[in-house]
Image 1 (cartoon, rainbow, N blue to C red):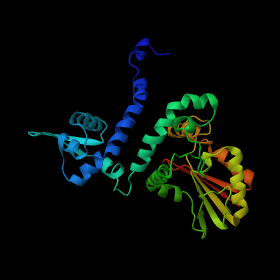
Image 2: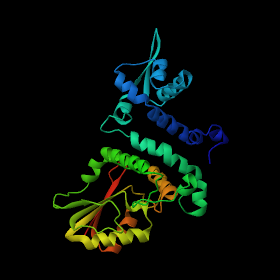
Image 3: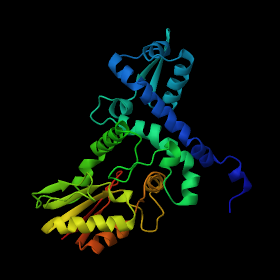
Image 4: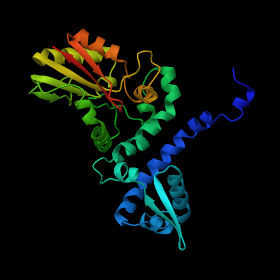
Length: 299
């Protein structure tokens, strides 16, 4: 055991306690349009000009900008006229709406939906069920197992998922040689009720983690039946370590599945078992080192 001096300043506890504060600073700067305004300006701007351009208070905007500087989302230059703010490269690429790699939509979904659901995490742990209805008073589900208050919210979620795919899709699709498959079907829609067309390869991207094991087996059995001989299924999911020790991002995603859906994140072995129960074999697993990994099963 370490000395009591090691416990005098528990920095890790401070960092964890402040985690949601950091998130909301970034989300708020995105929502107000700070990064978009600075990109469009083409030059550094003072805080009062940014505040005026975004219809915000001068005092509040100055604090938000300084917090973003501390988070390295903005850079500041001190001049004789005062502080001038500009985007960092990471903000230009990932936090402006116009960027091909923009994460704006997923940021807004996290800020306006996920953040509110997580207020009821303790209830989700006690009850073992999602808290969407408690958070928003709405119980309608979409075919993916997630819940939405409106079509607009669903569209924001889908746009957010597409934005995440823009930064990790290449790694997932390059995980295996998919050239033998000439007919590829990206599974979506109401797949439990709608028919699934015949194809050589089915891509199930972030679908199974929305559902419990029984629903996953039901869906995979349906995919197996539609799959042509020699074909397969590619699962795109964030994989837990086999001993469930991490990665921490995946563990947090699994907590989010508890709060928002019926599902959970799984290990490679757990996904392999689900595939085998549906009849798939020759299972391969590839960890990409990015947000999502790949599991390929063959018929």
